[in-house]
Image (cartoon, rainbow, N blue to C red; front, top):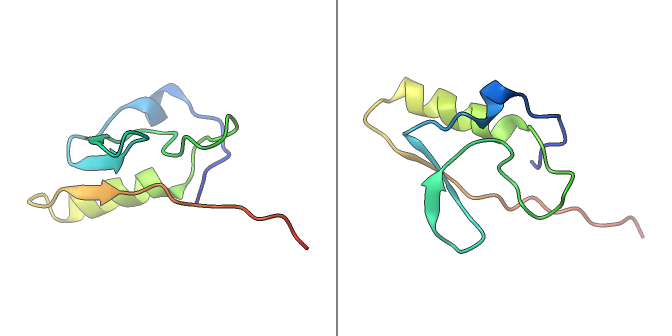
Length: 74
């Protein structure tokens, strides 16, 4: 889900075990905003989910792929 919340300083701190796929299809450390498709992208549940998963299994590296889309109602 693409976030729309306003990021605070703590939201922009990367987590070493949580990565995201960026616009160049390269893995990088994740931080909010995860999505880059719209200028209104902000804080959403994805990064917090990734951090929770990484903290639950410290041997894992979590990869997040921002792919939320919004379609206009017909």
